[in-house]
Amino acid sequence: MPPVLKIALRAILRNKLRSSLTILGIVIGVGAVIVMVGIGQGAKDLIEKQIESLGTNVLIIIPVSTSHTAARGTEGTITLTAEDVAAIAKECREVSHVSANLRTASQVVYGNQNWSTSIVGIHPDYQIIRNWELEAGRFIRSQDVKIMAKVCVLGQTVVVNLFGSLDPVGRWIRINNIPFKVIGVLKAKGQSPMGTDQDDTVLMPYTTVQRKIMGVTHVSAILASSYTATGRFRAIGQITDLLRERHRLRAGDEDDFRIISQVEYASTMTETSRTMTILLGSIASVSLVVGGIGIMNIMLVSTTERTREIGIRMAVGAKERDILLQFLIEATVLSSIGGIIGVISGIVFSNAISLYGGWPSMLTPLPVAIAFLFSNIVGIFFGYYPARKASRLNPIEALRYE
Image (cartoon, rainbow, N blue to C red; front, side, top):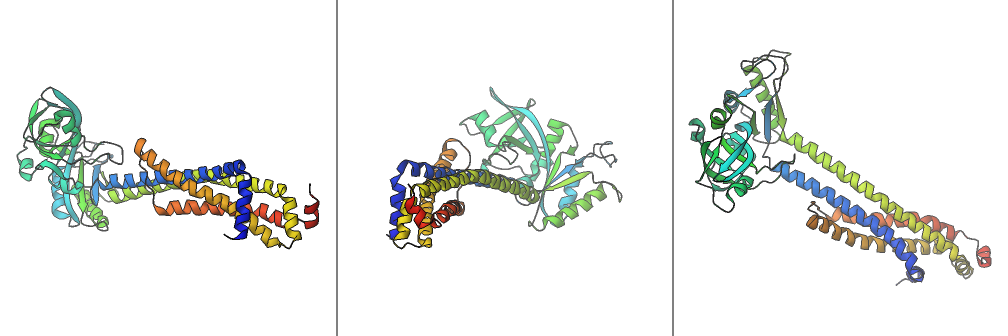
């Protein structure tokens, strides 16, 4: 071990309690940075997974109320229809799949069990657009749509609350006193980015929902997907042109529909999450700076206490840079020890928060390495002034210091 390092360690161990409290400030700072960044990255990863669960290259077309009158609907309430869905599927070449979408809420009954859930009317392409796999049974088919079949596919939340451990496939449930046969069960998807339970749903042919449950002729929305992520722009253009033509909108008229792209939505959510991570990390970094101020404080006190020692060292031949290096090494050792303990504490607390608090936390080597490196930079930065002050002492005045 180099002599300068031995002297630094000896000086630190000479005041164990004071050194421990100084190290604690760095430990809290580094640990807080790692925990906050881990929580931020965990939230970002969770949001990305939830967005992926919505489907691939999804485009959502929703009606927008305007002051214009379309071929169907009333003034101020423009709606989409199944004919629009068929036209998009036939004429928009960049669209790979398309599905009508109707949504309502209702009580679902099985035996003496009942559950309030979302009833969603869809086309068979819905499964491909949402990339939703089956746990058991089969999905809705085109023939079911044509004949307005009284069949349904259940999400996991509905299955648990209505059937418990029973296999629901082949059994009958009742909605508005109308019997529907369960033909399939969906795999669990979890929460959506908006915080809703995607598994709390009952899927049916949209024609069945239109005629037997809601009593309407329009659809609430249209779900479509493009062949590629980059092709979504062409798909949006084709859909826009087609719907404007079908809805007899003149040049200058506002669209009576809106197209939402999952990609843009995902980018917005990811950017929001990244901003939150930076904000959390920045707030936690304040405690690391406070720890650095603690290092400066203890080094200034140490300089004052060891003035006579510094004068003796200078008298026997120590140069200014030797004194500067000695005090810088002491500050760096303090911050390094605090950084190591802080990294370990941060990882432990991040895992504990994830395990017991239910909050997602994800750590990668890069933020951990940056936090440790930053703790050393803080030590050097705040240790430089006391070290420089010590190295600039006049040897004669230092020897006279009492």
